[in-house]
Image (cartoon, rainbow, N blue to C red):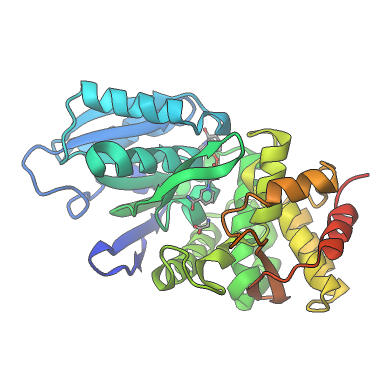
Amino acid sequence: MRRLIVSLGERSYPILIGKGLLSETIDLGAALPKVTHPKIAIVSNETVAPLYLDALQSSLALVGADVTLIVLPDGEQFKTWESINVIHDAMLSARCDRNTTVIALGGGVIGDLAGFAAATYQRGVAFVQIPTTLLSQVDSSVGGKTGINHARGKNMIGAFWQPKLVVADTTVLQSLSAREFSSGMAEVIKYGLIRDMPFFEWLERNLETLMARDAETLAYAIEQSCSNKAQVVAADEMETAKEGGRALLNLGHTFGHAIETGMGYGQWLHGEAVAAGTLMAAELSRRLGWIAETDVTRIRAIYQRASLPTIAPNLGASRYLELMSHDKKNLNGKLRLVLLRQLGEAVTFSEVNKSDLIATIEACCEN
Ligand code: NAD
Ligand code: GLY
């Protein structure tokens, strides 16, 4: 088992990565409130619960927990206030108190929902992440961003609420669809592009083994991804740095969120939108003279090998601009993008020229 720490002082927590962790006794000791009969609310969905709930419950039975199950419908379109109400209603009916721990068992949608429900239930209860998709194991379960979507934009409502523990069992990734696995690869590749060129080069060398879900290769990629994320989060937890900082984790996300919102939630998977969006950010970086055409080609090639889309949908430049104007990274009404100064080094950039932006959108969208 690999073990990393997200260093946030008293709120520091471990990330456990390994094969078969879910079928072992999960040591919730440090994560649970120090009471005799802790209450636990497990939030999962209709796809993941039949696959992994039994294993999780057997592991938890050993700590004598009183468990409430909340199984939501599956899909990004359910990352809403209605789902938060369902979780809170179930917790209130089960008389969950402030010593309750919410456990998210699922992908990023369940993690974001369960985390936000935990952050807001009786002003905040403990929370554990058991991510079951590649994307959630390498990104969304770490760092404490929780929330829901709004009709006007992705993840517009939410809270920073750090988990007490993250358990990433690589075995559960075997049941993930090829499309969802590829979606997670977009976030893995992101860490290489923004701050870790040796990892990007390792990915280029090992991509096929990784796509074949080889357990050791997967564990290494998840560890490197979480290690990069943990360092970024520890340095800028609330994304308040004026330049760089946690915002860099959003490479390709401003364009990507526009794709997700513009196409309708759930049509493009998050990682798919991030891949196409990252190529837009790369193209803009090339227009600024920061990276070369060969760099853009190199990024496109790794996405193609990971079966990710490399051409964005044609929403029209004005619709892209409208959607991007709502991005949370924007400051004082000014668009703030994450671009590539070079491969392996991302920067935040606010001096975007509108005509460059429109030319980029037109060059990267399907005709
Ligand atoms: P998801 O949660 O929708 O899961 C993808 C699909 O895989 C779902 O149908 C799910 O039921 C299914 N699934 C999950 N685990 C499975 C397994 N082991 N076997 C078979 N099927 C399984 O999507 P996701 O890609 O995990 O997460 C995307 C969400 O994460 C988006 O809402 C995005 O905004 C959010 N996100 C949040 C952060 C953050 O920092 N909080 C970061 C990145 C993404
Ligand atoms: N996924 C971006 C972040 O956690 O900040």
